[in-house]
Length: 391
Ligand code: URA
Ligand code: ZN
Image 1 (spheres, rainbow, N blue to C red):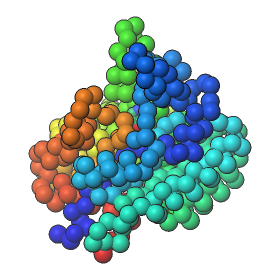
Image 2: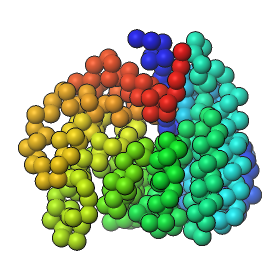
Image 3: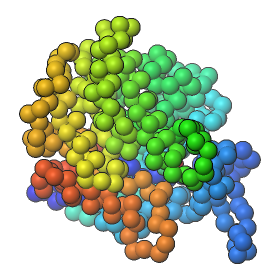
């Protein structure tokens, strides 16, 4: 195996660039960073992403903005290359003109962050690459979005964009986004779809559970719904080469894709809309491996691997029954290692982060993946998806 094929590549890892962190500090409403004095008399900074978040948000520190901290984290966990993205809520809360200028500045900042990072020994790669930002806010002019796609496409270390689920205010099935999908597809930029809003922490109950319900369930459901809307609106039919990478292993979409296909087939208003059975589109998507369990990763690769069997509308569920290991191996080609750093730090002192170790162990333990598939998920799939050539 060539050296580059053994690299560990993290495709889900975040930063608040210093310019963005300063901006959050200047704000008095969420999202914002504020200082407070702890009961021990120490000053700490906290990040409040959404108004009314439990425990007045979460602690925030240099691991969110200092590049050396990112590199130290990577060294500690054996990560060779990271494809870094701004953390939520990106520019979603800003007026269009501010969002446009800040997106452009942050894209230049991120290019410098990556291009001046150390090289990966024995290769032509740098250790850091990035996802840029588009000014995806209501009232934005399409020309501003397209201009920023071109800016990102011209920055050599930016390989895609990260975006949330609101689009320009009306979700990802909004026809105003059509020229943006077209431009992203043409530029070959990867779209990393990431949640932010979750679901109401008080949905169907009243007990306080910290960040657990919004993060464990709300986030993945948000991604599930946004991706489903894209499928239902025919975006994946019109832009078959669009590279769409889903956070948190696609949320519940893999588990619900046959139910989705059945609901479409039984709905007279929708059934004629799509070129393929809904399950087919899962084979067009990419999924991070931030699932924390081998069985979940195995299952996700099963449903990706069976997708081709549903190219024909009306294919029967029986088509997938000869699946087994070959189908699972095939699906692994669209699954990519990620950490979600600097979120989910260990609660106590620990050499390595539990959240990272668990995701690596999950990859290692997938039944039916051989060494080649596991290494592809750890890094080879990312090198291919992001077109990171090495020597
Ligand atoms: N919490 C967030 O707000 N964002 C992440 O990416 C992970 C956890
Ligand atoms: Zn994340």
